[in-house]
Amino acid sequence: DTAVSQTPKYLVTQMGNDKSIKCEQNLGHDTMYWYKQDSKKFLKIMFSYNNKELIINETVPNRFSPKSPDKAHLNLHINSLELGDSAVYFCASSQDGEGRNQPQHFGDGTRLSIL
Amino acid sequence: GDSVTQMEGPVTLSEEAFLTINCTYTATGYPSLFWYVQYPGEGLQLLLKATKADDKGSNKGFEATYRKETTSFHLEKGSVQVSDSAVYFCALRPGGGNKLTFGTGTQLKVEL
Image (cartoon, rainbow over all chains, first blue to last red; front, side, top):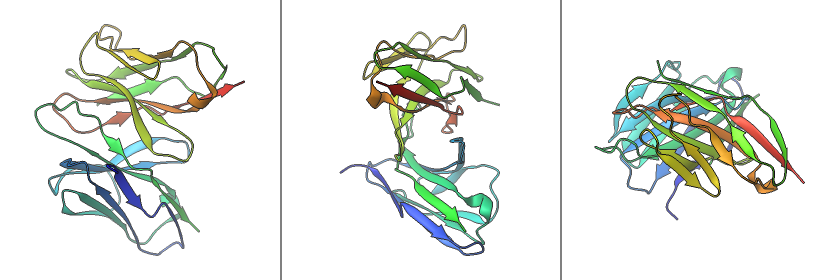
């Protein structure tokens, strides 16, 4: 199936741990994103990569580090997890280019819970 | 900066009722506008979009018209179903940019 896929779907871990969330898209898109959705459903962009190059970096703690090994993958590594990091993290992708009105396609989300 | 304002929810309707979810935006230039839907436990799915003034996006019985004079993109559906229960997000993407700015989301509950 063509899609944006994230793993894991659920992640429960202790405060202070380091964890990674993986994202892959097979849509041939050249731009990928990470969003954070809080408990009130508010969505906010964290990062965006275009062809492995960081193009958007919102005000996010340095504990969050995205890594894009190729344009089909954008992983999110989080160091020293804190209670406030509990949220749903969504990966998305889109095709950039001259027609910059292309919609973003979202993964199903990773539900991160910090104990 | 860019911003999107949606009506607060939850909105509770009976099946077959008419739906309107208001969305207004603030942006420079000519943004593209989107409605996304998030069903329980799932990710966001694009519902419809409009890329220029007076464009009407439509899908699955939902419609929204890009009104530049009122900076609005209200979502409407003539007859809602229980299966439409979800959270609806209005979003804009600036002309020449990648960043999507979302509204706070409006939860819709449709009851029999």
